[in-house]
Length: 98
Image (cartoon, rainbow, N blue to C red; front, top):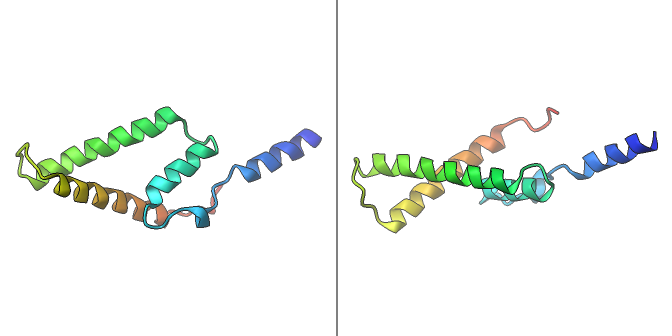
């Protein structure tokens, strides 16, 4: 029984407090918080980053009508827009379900 209590307490402390996440960089702070509690590995963080880069490449191609040239500032704006959209979606999810 003591073990169950300890496991239960451990699970309680391994939850991410949504109030501790940065609202202007929600997605990034959520990833960091999840990594800090061991919910996702460094490899998973890297995979997500690569997927974000693939999304940036796709959006950049649309933005430039297929051209391979884009200003760094424009690419940064597209990435910020992508991360903002991901953050909005994550904030909309019901976090009360276990």
